[in-house]
Image (cartoon, rainbow over all chains, first blue to last red):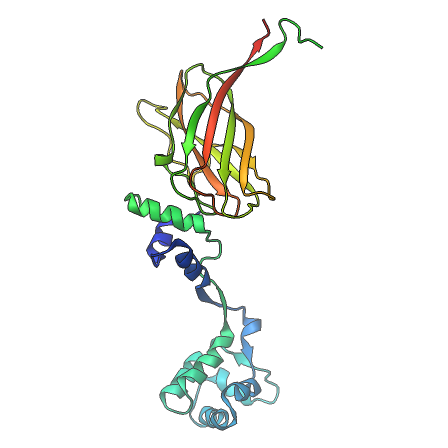
Amino acid sequence: MIDYKAIADADPGGDLQVAFDAMTAETVDVLRDVEYRMISARTVYGLIGDVSGKAAMDAIKTSVTDSDVKSWFSPDQGGVDSFLVGPTFDGLAAGGVITQAEADLVKSYAYTKTPKYPSLRMGHLQDARRKRAAGEI
Amino acid sequence: MAIGTGSAVENFDAQSLAITTSASIADGGFSSTAMATAITNSENCMVAAAVFQGTFAANPSGVVNLYARKLNVQSANSENTPDGNNTGGYVGSFPLDAGQTAQVVAIEIPLQNIGASQQYEFYISNDGVASLNSGATVHVTPKAVVPKA
């Protein structure tokens, strides 16, 4: 189904082609399947750098109680779910151990970007504008 | 070879202008009610010829679809206007020449009659990827099979 109302609501207005290009460029974050969200401690080091990476790991060792996060330091642990450790890294950023940008980078492993309007065609936007102007939607 | 008396041949009603696009129609878009001229099937024909004429902004790829919206099917109530969610009035597609921007395509379409002298509004949707320029037309000619005199 074509949701003309939602399209009209999201329409940035102005030139049709420019508005269409802007809408088709928009993306949303979609949670990946768990097997693709797994992230290792070594990867975190690579993402946020040795200095803050070590600081983050030290902070996790000493202050984070979440068992999933603690399990990073188990000899046979290959990784943890980057979605589940998101709040932990937000907390580390809030505490100044790492930056929020570094926390977001770690969390980004949990998501994939997909088009917000994957099947939008320019005529849909054109029709949505006409329907909105006519008071139909 | 001459066609013998009594053979099935076609008779044609007058050709009527059904659509004139007053604005461009982007890919996936529909013509509007304002672009349609209602046609009355006064001879109660069951089929018609339809001719699309139009020019695209670039060489198209695909088809232009044609829809017949039946008017006054119950008292003054008419079918809903065709759009991307309401395509039940589809009567045919004009296959486009991918090597040209200017198109003239003729097809045969069914005419569903809910009552005598059924009225229709015709709509097109642009499924040709390229934008259809303003000024495109669709003409409709009701026709019937009759015995040759």
